[in-house]
Amino acid sequence: MKQLNHPYEYLMQTLRESVLTKESFLKDAGETLIRASEALANGIRQGGKVLIFGNGGSAADAQHMAAEMVGKLFIDRRPLPVLALTTDSSILTAIGNDYGYEQVFLRQVQALAKSGDIVLAISTSGNSKNVLLALQAAKTMGCFTIGLTGGSGGKLKEICDLCLCAAHGANSSRIQETHIFAIHSIVDILDRFYLKGFEDLK
Image 1 (cartoon, rainbow, N blue to C red):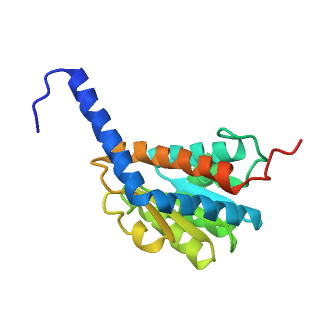
Image 2: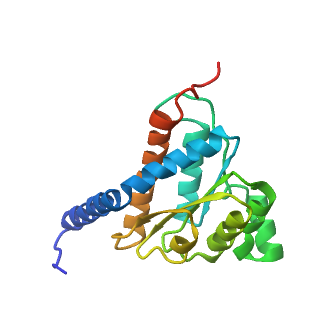
């Protein structure tokens, strides 16, 4: 690797990495991203809800996406039935204490999901055990599953119905930057092309 002599050089290098990761992601997964938006719209129109979860920065991304679907991104429309399973500290700590951290999303999926719902799991490695357990349960329950991951995609890539993988992300930061691009894009495409007629009820 080239020796960097100034923090600004390093920042420019990380910017280039971020841009290249997003460009590669869109080239590889652009059509899958559009299919994910369409699947969300179909599920919502048929009375389903969306459950989103992940750990750490991915937990923040889950909450970010839920906020833009219950609230709005660019276009006013009725609030959508979306839950981030990362926000209730009492549920998370109770399950973690009584059953182990591996079940913090699993038990919420078992409690809240039903056939026809959409479950969106976020894991930069694709190998977070608590994410995989919940995703597998969701599939068994008849939910449509979408994964956001990076690198090789890990085990998550093998079990979800649609996988959006930032395959060229060199580290979790570049992968997460691509994930937030994907989240914004999914919601934007959903609103502009697949949820026409869902204008906010006055």
